[in-house]
Length: 306
Image (tube, rainbow, N blue to C red; front, side, top):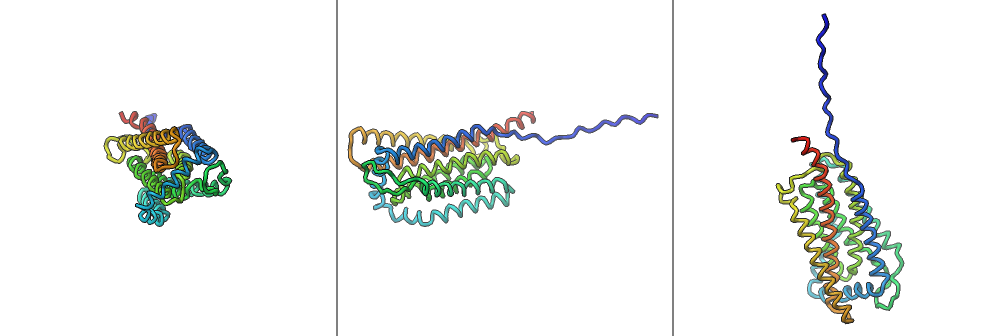
């Protein structure tokens, strides 16, 4: 007698994860690099840029008279605070959630950003004499601002997509306040802070691509309306603050330059507007970039479950 044919069970294959396209991240990194170069060329190599930047730095003394003690204390603990915050969050996520690769990549990006800042600061020549009374040594980019922003980015990269929008906004706010403090204490000019933000954003874009490509299913989250920390209004708030600050800075600068006035407190306000606009613009872009990629990765899984 012939034995009945046995039916072989189909082998279940694990769903193939959708690899995010590299183009958006590469383009974002290139845009940050070009913005860094443009910041240097305008605020350091041109007389108009030097005048705007130096006027904001000089008039920061007025703000320092009122809140100088508080900001000085903030700056004293800033390096330790940034490292502690990033270390605690990354350690918790690494141990509790077992995201070893993401933690390692985020720490490498943080170190690369701070190293790049020091190399750029040491490699750039002194500020050229273009008729503006200014200190000749190069202070671009700001080391304190790089440390604060890179710590915030490290936390932003390792947390789950559910928490990234809120973490991005809070981290961006922390970096912006830190950058403003350096100007008020007259450690740096506004352009130094913006340059630091662009350096950090450059490494953050590259690190985000690697994390999304190496991260397991924890990097997939589509129910943005079901959790307060992942709702879109974090992005909208960041974008709205960036637009408002940019418009304010443009209006102030156009008014001052058009009337050919000497340095006033308005230049300081314009410099603060530039920092706020730059910081929140990069924050909104980062939340959008990673949020779109995460939801793009989640779509095939949702389609298969129907």
